[in-house]
Image 1: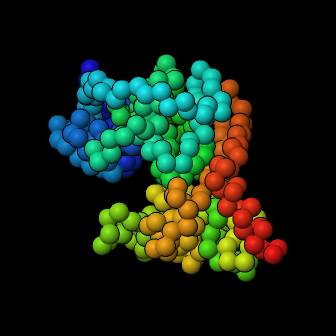
Image 2: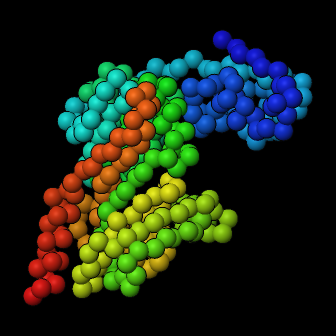
Image 3: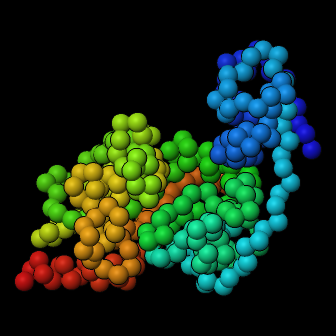
Length: 305
């Protein structure tokens, strides 16, 4: 079904994607709207334009959402660790080694496969291979993430995420001893210009800010608590490497001789957000994985010996 909107004086000079989110596609995420525009499912005066197009008085906007593709991802019983569930959302404690959603380059079972087995309803905003996925954590990072069960909740949580209203707190074991007890890393991040598998701090990157606090010091390592103010790809891993304290076990941003066998020692331990319908602040925590605990205990023993 096509939807139409004529630009009035209150919309003049505003971005096309912002106006669509505000007036036509109120329950869709900003990224969904931008994909619609990019795929030419949204026209202005009969022509394809970019998301940042500044509207003019009298512009005629026409939007036609494509029919939802049939989900071809099969449900798999992965026995997901569900921390909390209600009619609107699910909070999952993702194990280390699990990818969040399918991709053309990855064909093993993902969190989405497990969600389809355990959850009856999931939001449709992010398309057929990412149902319910509001935000992600890396494959080899363990811990908490929230999943939306309907489009209203997805839109609400996505907006909260964009406004930095969702608190995401991590624990990381990093190389080296910190001199300071706490601090903030404010350094822009973008795709590495030469290695497309990596992100890097670069002047032309997107704004990225990470707050850190020292929890425990060892002879050659430090346990830190990190809180994301923004959510760039690999943000904590990149920022820690940038200040010469890469995350232990990180095969991309750390030393070539990797400690451990299950990926980086990085865990999303706490998640706090406003509930979409209850409008209550909710907070969840997840204990460190056993392998993370084991390494910390080894380091403690070495520190006192």
